[in-house]
Length: 127
Image 1 (tube, rainbow, N blue to C red):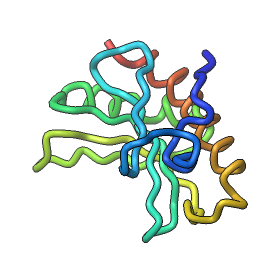
Image 2: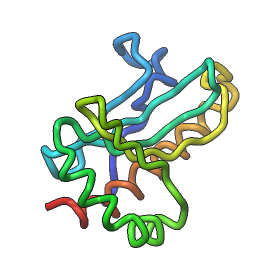
Image 3: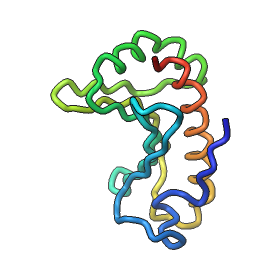
Image 4: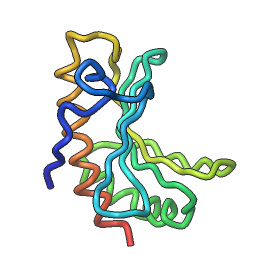
């Protein structure tokens, strides 16, 4: 699956008429959740996450397949049920300062590659 999202994210706000936000949402074949690409300049990281709103059962189904999902991705992700919130998240982060324009191409490649991996793997476990 190839996601065509470049230039796509708040890192490329110079090229877009983007809203002033730190995330960019992507659909990947389901209405049950979406992929969110995030940036945090204070904590200096980029993130790619599956964002699940109002569906703790879907989160639990994914968590039950944690070992298989992480094996297919080839790396561990952070599982965030957030029991007191309406949403749950499954996220991986990449250290970097989103304000460093000289790194934008590197960050964009990481975000696209990771979003494609997430879309390919997670869709298999969403019913």
